Image (cartoon, rainbow, N blue to C red; front, top):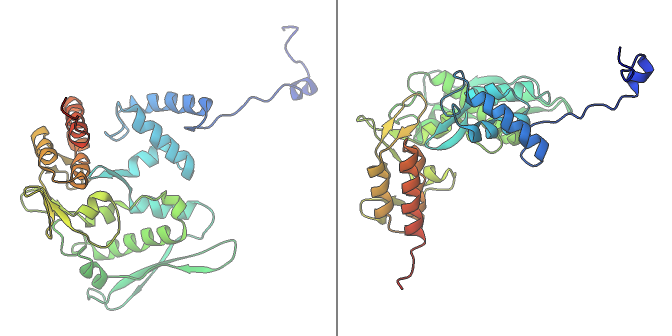
Length: 299
């Protein structure tokens, strides 16, 4: 046995404790650990395709998992990209509330007449520190119809209304009482409800939906006319009906960039660049965007 190796319990206790590092983006050790873990995950075929071979996406997922105290693979499987924006699945938001330790498990109360406009659901839970019953917003079929969720093409409200009532009630409860758990992200089903899928596979989305805001409806840009109009902004592309992801061509996005009639419309069109699968085409489109946003003065 080496003379330098501790041979007693007291000697072992005197050994300096090893430092423990966690994934982080703000310190060198945590960031290095994040990159190493991300490299491993990115090389796996079990992670969703948005993370395969994409180390930056894996680093972000690891950071988000660390912040909410969830398993990284669970975050990757439930962080869904809808029209280029990250969203949480409603199941994940509900499970995060149930496992955070601050509340009892979410429960649901139904009211009104089933299969009628009055039929609805509210979520509730008990805050463990105070014993208070926290009741969420009432979600009804009438609300879904008034907000335009029910009648949208591809909507699940017609085929599985009870499940959608529970999902929306649960995700809204989380947004109201534990917004830090969602980190400001919308539920996947909420974002899908603002997208109107057409019969030909294209979809229509308003300017507010593209911005990801919940402000009152404002003017919507008609890209073809390059002037504010009162109708929706048509965006044609190949849509994955399950995930809501859209694939667009270089020509489609370039046409929208060139025809943008304002900086606002230009920024909205630039948000479509990520939907082009070819990385080189994305790079070229960003150059087009920059040249249009910051035109050089003629010499």
